[in-house]
Length: 171
Image (cartoon, rainbow, N blue to C red):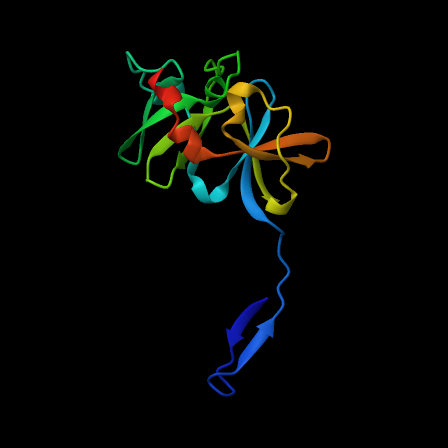
């Protein structure tokens, strides 16, 4: 329900207007190389882009989870293979024309690019229907807030702040 001030009546008169809208919060759905379906809250996403491998600068002596750095509107952003970070055995295929990258921030303003296999789109998902993730792999479990069962698929919700602030980057 949205309240609106009616300027034609008394100044303090309020009208109630019913508005139909999607339930829940907006999330970005995407897929890892293994076919695992994941989601991130739209509010923590700075940008979703497709980059060529030429736009990635390999960096020596960094975590093997990082595939390079890129320039995002004048800012240097580290790009990680999200699947490998989450324990997937197969690295992301970089032998293709473009790689989808999700740029996310945490509550301290740190920015990280997460390379994924494909972007599925935006979905409205209700937090009240989020269930505990019972069969999540151990390497991924500390970064999963829960899961939805949408149609015949399981969609896990990731915690981008936990990913950005993880001690795995030091390894």
